Image (cartoon, rainbow over all chains, first blue to last red; front, side, top):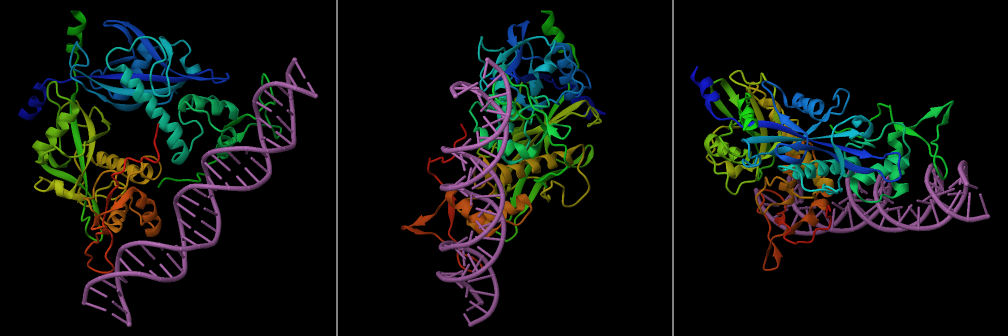
Length: 241
Length: 241
DNA sequence: GGAATAGTGTCTTTCAGACACTATCTG
DNA sequence: CAGATAGTGTCTGAAAGACACTATTCC
C-alpha cells in the first residue's frame, strides 16, 4: 500500500552505536584509576571509541554486543549490560555520511578486558582524557557523558536511592572495605572519610567466613582487613515502590 | 572512495520520534491530575502518542519540535525542551517497516496546550492509562517510562540533588504552597505532610510582595494563603561540583 | 618498639517525620 | 459562632560528619 512505500522512500540516517568502555584498573593496588578504552583507527585516522553501524533488523543491544566482539575482541556474555547515554545527532558529526550515534557506556572489570584490543586511557572524574590528543568525531563528549553518569551512580544514587556498595561492579569479590573505598574515590575523585564510609557500607556487606571466623586479607603492611562480599539476604530495607 | 559508498549500501532503520506530552490539569483546583496527550489515528487505527520520522539531515530535537507543531498543533518556542527517555527498537514493533523510536517526554502546563489536538488522558503515578484501550505500538511502555522519569525528578532529585520546587514547571507563578503540594501529590501519587513539605519548600521560594506586605490568594474557603514564586537569588547553597 | 593499617566508640549537627497548637478567612 | 484552611512551634529519631581512641600486623 502507498503508506508503506512512502515510509521507505525517505532518506534514513545511518544509526551507529558508540561505546565508552569504562574500567577501574589496579583495584588491589593503593591507588586504583578510572580509565576508558580507545582504539586507533585509520579511516579517518586517530583515536576513537569502538563503534559500528546497526545491521538490518538488529536491535541496539545486539549491535553493542557485536561491537564488543568484533571491535574490542571480548565476549559480551556474562558481562554487565551497556546502557544508553544519549543520542549524538549533529548532521555534520561524520563527514562520510549522515550518521546518528546512540552513545552507550559499559563498566567492566580489568579482568574482563584481558586480551581486549585498544588502550586504557586514564580519565579524570570530570570525564576528560588524561593524555593524548582529542578523540575523533564527538567521542570526547561521549566519554564525558559516560563518566558523569558513572559518578552519579556512585555518589548520588548510592547515597540516597538504590543503595549498592559497588553499582557498576568494578571490584571482584571478596574485597576489603579499603579497596571498596579506593574504587569510590577513583570514581568520584575526592577522598572519603574512612569511618563514615565503612559505617554506611557495612550493612550492605557480609564478611566472608571460614569455620565461623572472618577471612582476612594478606596485606603488605598493617593489620589484615576482613574480606567482604555483597549481602545475599533478600531483606530490602528501602524499597522504591 | 569505497568506504563512503559502503556505508550507504547497508539497509538503514527508519528513525522516528515519539513524544509523551505530560501535563497536570487543574492546578488551581483541589485535586490536580496528571495526564498524557494521545491522538486518534487511522493508519493503523487506534490511539497513539504523537510522533514522526526524522527528515534528511535533521536533528532529533528539531524533529520533536516538528511533531509538536504538525501533529499536536502548538508552537514549541518558549516551551520546555523534551528529553530522551530511551530507544524502542524491537524489529517487529511496527508492521510497516523497520523503525526505531527515540521516545521523548515533555512536560507542559495546561495553558500551553490550549488549542492542541488530541485528548488528555489521566495517568496513574505508575504510568498506566486511566481509561480506554491500550495505545498502539509500544506506546503504553513509553508513557510508563515518561511517568517514571517524571516521578524520579519530583521525589528523588527534588529531595536530594537538584533541589527545585517544581522541576518540570507545571505551575504558573505565583502559587500557594497548597497548590504546589497538590501538584507534587498528583505526580508522586501519595499524600505529603503539609508542614514538612512547606518547611522544605520555603527556602526555595520567596513571597510575592506588594507595598512590603505579602500578597494573599483569594481562597474559596478558609484563610487566604501567601503567594510565592521561585527565588531569584543566585545563592546556591548546594552546588554539585 | 614503631610504622602502618583495621576497626570501634561517641559527640554534634542536621533534618525528616509527626503532632499540637494558633491565626485568619467565609458564611 | 462553626468550618475550613494557613501557618508556627517543638519533640523525636535517624544518620552524616568529625574526631579520638584501641587493635593487630610487619619490620
